[in-house]
Amino acid sequence: MTALREIALTVEERDTNQFFWVLLEAVSSDASEAIHYRKIRSATLPQPSYSSALAVGANALRRFADSGGFSETIL
Image 1 (tube, helix red, strand yellow):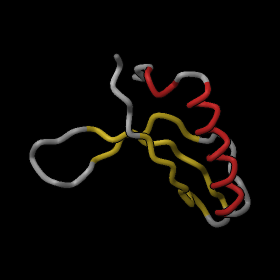
Image 2 (image 1 turned 90 degrees about the vertical axis):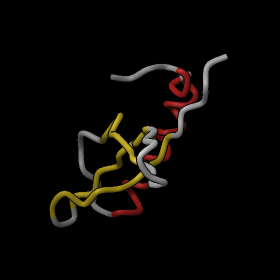
Image 3 (image 1 turned 90 degrees about the horizontal axis):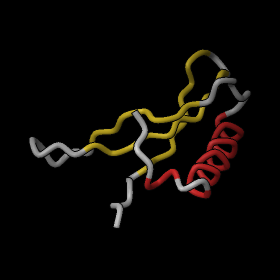
């Protein structure tokens, strides 16, 4: 059985009123108790607000899960 992946959704404001959703995956690090993440997917077009980017990102996360993305390897 494939291990589940730890995926997080966040929003970045890269420029004034330019909000992008970003999917992150936790990567293990035995050096500390902190959780480190790497980007695995990101919006290509900005949204005009944080809440809009969050909603669009949640939909992208849902599609990712429905496609079996939690068990695939992304490089």
